Image (cartoon, rainbow, N blue to C red; front, side):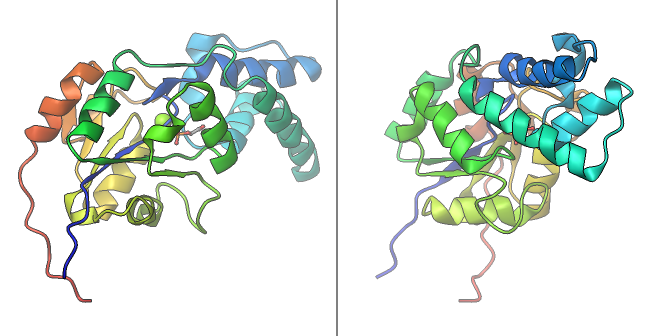
Amino acid sequence: MHKLSPRVLVFDLDGTLADTAPDLIGTLNVILTREDLPPLPLEQARDLIGAGARALLERGLAASGRTADAEELERLFSDFIAHYSDHIADMSELFEGVEASLQRFSEAGWALAVCTNKFESQSVKLLELLGVADRFAAICGRDTFDVFKPNPRHLTETIARAGGDPATAVMVGDSLTDIKTAQAAGIPVIAVPFGYTEVPIDQLGPDRIIDHFDELWDAVASLPARVPLPSSA
Ligand SMILES: O=C(O)COP(=O)(O)O
Ligand SMILES: [Mg+2]
């Protein structure tokens, strides 16, 4: 008998579920200060987030006019990860309305998942400290599979791990990376404008934009119904 799989709602983490910029940029600034570079202001540096910690470090060094060879970058990156792991939830917090929204979708039978370019272990740790890790059927980071966002397989494999089907899944994200990933996977994407993006999110072509998590339920309900493609299996 065919078992109906749950619909999966997949969230990006940094800038979507949680405002993690203070701890990420705080760590970046510790590294910059150790290198005798001035710290970057949070408002300027928050949009450097979104492509993973290594990219954040590289972008932060570039913004400070500092070049680093591969070996030096490795050393700074391991310092970054060590410091960030110890301070991952010092100031980071869930955006308003996240918990109630997760609860509402869970109660309605949705499976929830996270697809993030953070490392998996750091994502799990952060979500545990924020008290919501148990809500998710799958938490998949940049090192969970052999590919990561914007490769669409990061998203489709996350959905599979959560027991769902891409044909009925929905993605929620804050950046161009999320929108590109979802579109390449043929999955509708709802964007939040309060995350980390250099280009305003309404210029990136998401299917819907919500200003607050209270609007997520109606936004998902308003997406056009999709006709699943016949499975080749
Ligand atoms: O930490 C990052 O730079 C990216 O993380 P995200 O994919 O959850 O936005
Ligand atoms: Mg993000």
